[in-house]
Length: 575
Image (cartoon, rainbow, N blue to C red; front, side, top):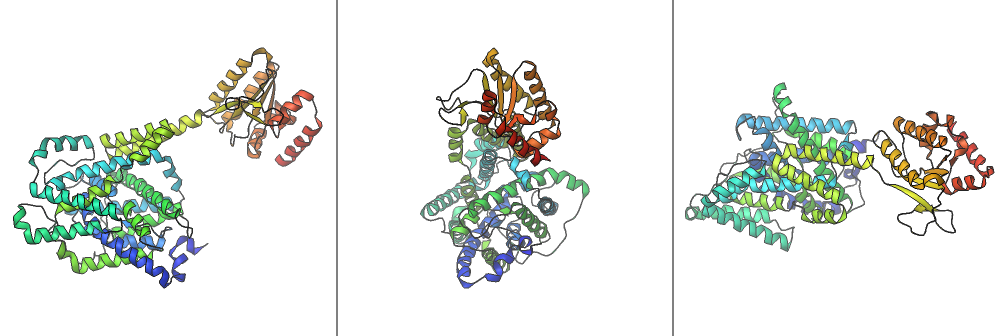
């Protein structure tokens, strides 16, 4: 067993040097500066006291630095997971109450346990059922939901909070005239300042700048601005160790939201990790190890009062751009958060909530991926409609049902595509031994008495009827002249029992009609399945050919010498 694969920090820590530290130090400080105001802001989204956003930036980061296979992914509180937590927990307890906090921490333990078990049993492939169009639609919808839910803090109006956007939009439309002028001015100015600094250079800590400006303005000129909601007291000190309270009935109720957080968190981490991996050649992302790392981060984090965490798109990108080379950058960010918790929390007393809302809105609206939607419309209409359906489903039905819609539609599209794969009739390229698709190569020679049929997928229970119908359709077009059918099986990589029985039935059917049925390019494993299923009882082993041209040549000339050599070879290979 390779211990370095289980504990990836052992890959880079023994060879750590001052050159690596310089980049990690700058990146760690930069991300830490951004993480502190974001952590406070995202805790508010989750319906938790601000201090819990900072707790999420401690132990989970340390655990991921030890066990994560990516050296640049930034773990901690994120807007999307925070809203999912608020959506799930708010139905069980009053936001901000002791029971609410306890449930959110228990949820982190559940999420971590599920992720860890999935990683141990190599179940990371499950996330593949969420295609990129689904991820794009889901992420864009959640970004809009988060952004609109922050309008209550941006404008100082008690709008309804919901993960179903239509209710929020209607309430905003009805109550927007009651906006608080000072709150709105400070919030909108913060939005503009953040956008300007991001346009100049993404490395500029725009979030920290507006936080400092907001605190200064409210502390020294607060009387001139009337009633502007502020964060007020944030307790100092580090989180204490404690095991979350277990309640079987509560765990049962939290399972759907926990699985949603598992899927979303893993998707975010893998997509971010893969994009960062492509920019270097020092390490590779291991999907199942990422699940284990996330699981340990959330489980151990829950013991120190953290709610569910995952990787951040924005902080991970800034971490990489700032020169992070290893997980040491995350540990430096942790040191900054520890220092803040011990000594600096009183400074955030006058921090306006509208400034935090501005930070969140700018961050999440950048996740609305219009470019990807335009690309999908041009490249693949089915993927575009899949993305749009997930987007609309998430907006109108909520986050939990949105991901169910996405998974369901992904499976439907997968079944549709595998049950109706591409089929083609092949014709011979003049003066060659090659056969190509007649619909793409006009010059190919098509013979009236020969049908070369290509099926571009595995043959199994979901598409065996489609195979039969398409084969019969092409054979029918040939009419009475048809004397030979060659199945070009180069694209067939698997055949199940239903597919084999259908194939045997068709061979018998065409044999009765006096039509010879030959097979070309059959892969070894597929050929083994056919042999084990008794296909040699209805056709001879000499009916298998290496290429379609060999099959046609054998039929036309009756030259058995070369074919007998190939038949002997495949017979030996099978036995």
